[in-house]
Amino acid sequence: MNDEIFEGIHKNLTVEHIMTPKEEFCFYSLDSALQKDITIFPIKDKNGRITRYFDSNYSEEHYILPDKTVSKDLDIMSLIKILDRSSFFFVIHADIVGIVTVSDLRKGAVRMFFYLLLYRLENQMKIFFKERMSEDDFINIAKPRCRMQKKDYELSVFEECSFYDYLAALKNYNVFKEKHGMSIRDVEKFGGLDKFRNWIMHPSREEVKLKIDSQLDYNNYLFKQLDRIQKLEELLKTT
Image (cartoon, rainbow, N blue to C red; front, side):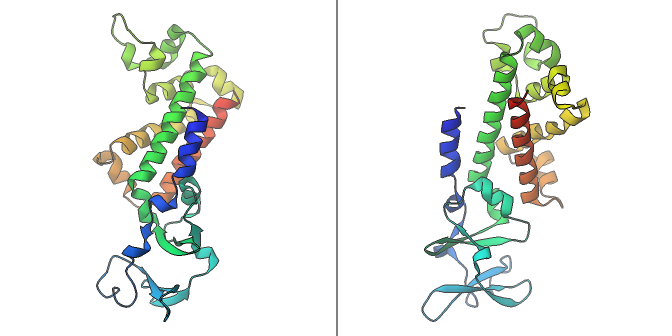
C-alpha cells in the first residue's frame, strides 16, 4: 500500500467514527437506574450543558476536566495508546459531542484500521524479500504451502504466499537476524501477528476470540499488536 494512501486513511479514521454520540447518551439520574451495564453518566446543568458526570462504580460525581476529554479528530492509533482498561473520554468539538470508552475499540472501524496496518506490513515484507533474493531462495527459507505441489504456477511466489509465510522467512533469514542481533526465538515473537490478523479478518473465530475476551486487557492487547507492527516495520527499514 502506498504510504500516502495509508496516511490519508489513518488521519481520517478518528474518534468520531467510534464514539457514542451525545444524542445517544444515558444521563444521570434519568437513565442511570435503568442502565446497569453503563458506569459513566453525563449530568446536565440547569442550562442543558454537560459539565459533570456520575461514576456508578464509586457513586461519585465529578467535573469534566481537560484530562478527561479528547478531540473528535484524534486518530484511532493515538486513542489506543491513551485508553486504559477503566478509562473513558468525553469527546469535544467546541462542546461535548460524544463519549468514547474501551468497548468502542471493538467496533469495525478499529478492526479496519488494523487490517490496513497489517496489509501494509505484509506488502513491506514482500518488497523486502523481492529486493534481496530469488523466488527459489525464498521458497527454500519460507517453505510456503502455496509451493508444495509440483506444477506450473501463474503468479510469483511473492504474490501467492501468505502473511505467515513471510514471518517464517524472516525467522530463517540469517541476514535479518544477524543485522539486529536477534535469535530465532526473538523473531518468533512477531508470530502472534498472524493470529491477530486472522482474528481481524474473522472476529467470530472462537479460538482467537476466547483468548482476547479473557483477563487480558483488550486495549492493552491492541496496543501490544500495534507495538509489534511498528517495531517490525522499523526492523525491515533498517536491514
